Image (tube, rainbow, N blue to C red; front, side, top):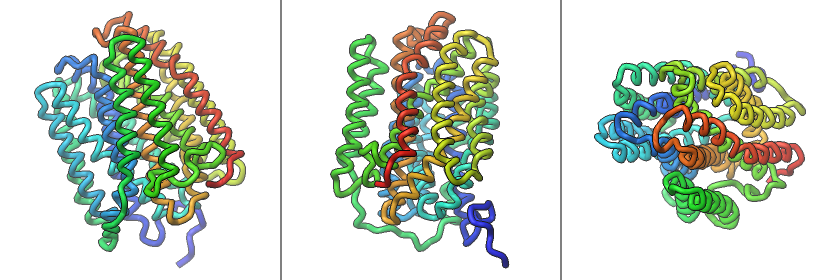
Length: 463
């Protein structure tokens, strides 16, 4: 039997990795489809449960749980093993779905979203751990390209699922369906992951860092409900400062969430994590508020609005697949080009959404998604390539944790801006137009800092 070409698709699936690769794709599907379905049905949820003021929290609450879980997934895998940890996490996600599906009020719905976030965050983080420890560096661009392809499928099916449920007036059934999928992932993990990985009972937990992350993300989320610009601004800045301090403190602890050097922007991990966090945070307004703005200004139904917003995920998929075979100096330039393209997408959104037209939003979404597709896999590859075997697990989990933290911070910050423009009082033309400008204009500086961090990766040293 011939040896597969290094870095090829055959190499990805060789040596018993095919079943593990399948499980990773299933876990990613759960997270990807959930986010797209929920974004599409949120206007219906708000109308039914009276939760327009909590639009941001429906996402931020989910992401707060995801951040806490994703950040600890590397330690969870070390203590209990990937097999048992993944199965239990998927079941917890299913329980959260059941709460949101059956919840009689917005608070029960949001509590369910937090549990979905915890369970889903662990599943997503454990998938990242599996990639980092089970797949060699040469296969990572292909693996991450496949992950973006799963997102692409979700971008086509997710809005359709959410839109059909919303337009039929049965949005709760979306969460019933995800509860069933969560149980399916739990059962599949027990079959596909090897039995021998039972973990180390003595593995530590970074309680201090996890607590600080919870406080930081919660502070940003509370800014969404503060009611005035001064208090909202103070809470947002305090939350960001706490998150930055967490990275610095983590580098000085015995049990860490991130690999050595992550707090230093002169290292590859430091620059990579910074770029991932900043660009992700800047992009969140597109998916959180895009469907609601389009339904109000362009007169689209939930299904149509969901598909327009899905242009971002589809562009991410196509760009990621297109560049997955590049080697040499190309990955460094793709990282830089991708950061610039994502920032261009954020800037174009300032003009696109208030216009009330669909095609400018598609253009902005394509620029935004292509930016991540060009750069994300190569950022992850360069980050993991510089780590030794003892740190690859937490390094890979750190990618998921940083992305989720950026998503939570970005969603909550977008909620602050949107509510200050009047969206908390309800959706109308005036509030939707104002949100369409300021949700994106406020994060252009954040995205530019992400470009700077991405540019530094090519000049940075290993941790």
